[in-house]
Image 1 (spheres, rainbow, N blue to C red):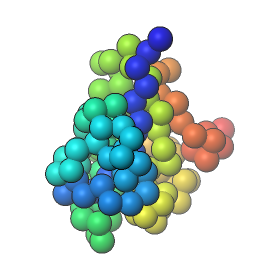
Image 2: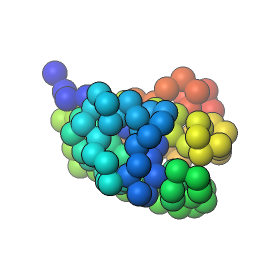
Image 3: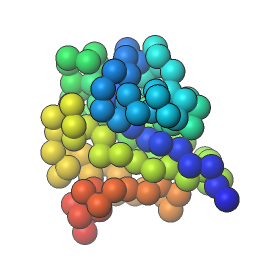
Image 4: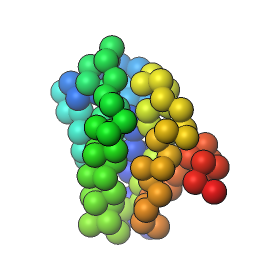
Length: 118
């Protein structure tokens, strides 16, 4: 059985104080001060620069592409993606979901993103 990785939206400062980031910190091994990449059984995709300042869509797309490269390089892991960017960062699913269009089979998207990709 593959190890499941909780994929959450973060800020570049690694201040995991609310939303899915807080869940990642509390339950999935996320580390304070680390805002990007694998940590414990979680993977941080930045959607914000700081807790109060969001990243641009092009910056988020860059980080999603880095994540997808990581997922392709680690087919033994199963990645459960939360609706990153659609909570505290304030973007809508139709703005973020297209970044996941070429996701490999080990990346599981939630219905809110899948509906936008259909």
